[in-house]
Amino acid sequence: MRVTVEIDDVVLQDLMRFTGEKRKGTALAKAATEAWQLRRRKEVTDKFLSGEWSVDLEPVDRRKDDAKRARWFK
Image 1 (cartoon, rainbow, N blue to C red):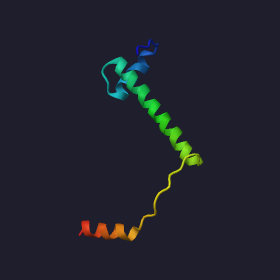
Image 2 (tube, rainbow, N blue to C red):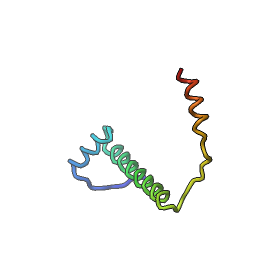
Image 3 (cartoon, rainbow, N blue to C red):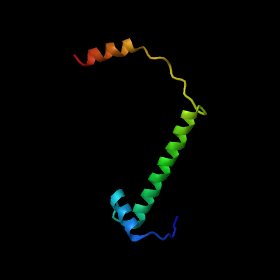
Image 4 (cartoon, one colour):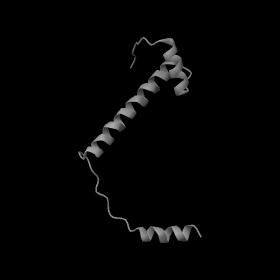
């Protein structure tokens, strides 16, 4: 998809530096994608922290883990 935007040159140069991209469009696309990913992660994290979502985990017997670790790291 093509989009036309106006961005200050200083901001665009910083975006290119932050993303490591050499082309303006690629840098902007990468920055937008990273911003979207961060926002999405925050939404998912907030749902877990609020209790809206949860995960039922099976209990772990730490003694078995310690025995395995002792065999691996003699």
